[in-house]
Length: 388
Picture 1: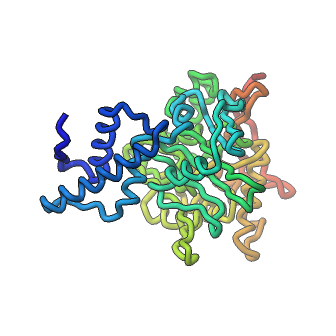
Picture 2 (picture 1 turned 180 degrees about the vertical axis):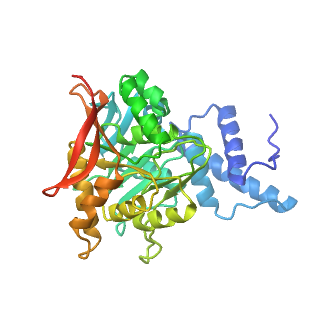
Picture 3 (picture 1 turned 30 degrees about the vertical axis):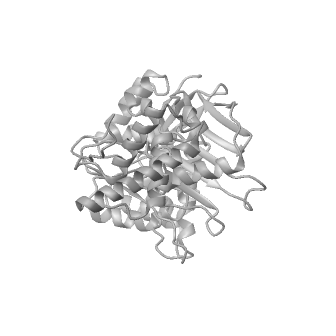
């Protein structure tokens, strides 16, 4: 095979270099996971080869060679020992408590994975995952949330916030359950409940998806967005991209962490306000957990239908929590305004649950009556699942 470099015009410099590195690894029958040093040598050689060729022909140069090498290695080698688990469609989530304690979740249940890493390998994997996201983790920023290229969510915490080791969670983006029909097929959603939800979406109703951690709230919310009428313009707001919904008219917004100087942060509250300037037919907040609840509530009361998820133990508790969160926005926010506003603007609360064996399902759908009695938002149950 000729080693002449001939990049296509449609390829970026990095993609072209990655293709050459992949070809050379294949020629040498070298496994980048088992021989990372050789892969690194080839990557450096091909980056420099590209720049020599580009300089002679007046083409695009790679300005940051070290950054390009890291991106090429991440593209070619994947994520080393974790790649097989990330490629396994039955694995829903992966987390690292310590280099020798790696766990995965399948069908809602956790198990220990037969993978042993080193401290350096964990740090290297995280660096490669964060490379293309523009986010960082260090002593000044010991937490990070980021989206991986496939839409999976990465969360990392480092010492001294953790006791000794880097704590890494990867919640995978599962394409198998992206529509209401998919959820019906696996038994997570009853057909009659799906019919109620489709009717509500078509009618411009506001839906709140509630439940504990790992019960499928985000998965259901994504399926609900996908079920919206195609003529609706949807704007989604998230701290980190997770929904990854394909729709004819959709804009996805993501928050931003502050810079090293403490500037440039973009909060969910700011995003909700900006989203209202984008002519949404439906405003979606990936997860309501703080004072952005006030901005969402104000948006709902201007007539913009919404959808969001919220951690709660029941549908009624979700409304109680949604009424409490706006109070975090300031001392001048009064519950006497918040509760009636929620009762009037939220149409359905869809509560998700999980069985002891890990099966996720929609347990109940309730509807606020519009009345608040003794500080409690009144609801009526319009659908409830049978015994799981």
